[in-house]
Image (cartoon, rainbow, N blue to C red; front, top):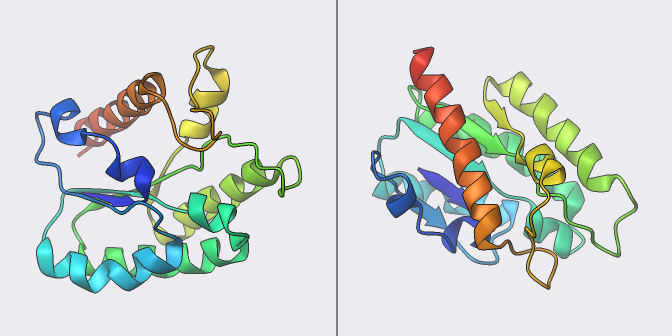
Length: 170
């Protein structure tokens, strides 16, 4: 199960994760508050999941509501852990966007706090941020937020590596 914003919604995850049944609940423009509000409807549509990847926070940053991300994400993770007790929950890092209204290092700092939150809630942290930073490919579209096919390929590969790790350690 994939939960998030346009970064999730805009990719055909099923065709790239063909060995798995993918439920994509990505909503373009979604903020952490939107995802939190959508959880009951998502639970009504999908009552079970083995793995849940949460990708949220970009639109909070774009709209100047970065202070909402951590408290909303914590509530999201607690509810998902309750509603899907047997699922592995992964939280994807924020991508290395450069936004003019944010001080340098803000995304990295927030990712550190998200990683700490995943430890506190028993979830897993998927550090795609570092994989993007280390890449020499063109990963962002002109808006600096949405990602290219090369970025989706890198993200998909990172996600599959983590899934393989989860399966091997189950």
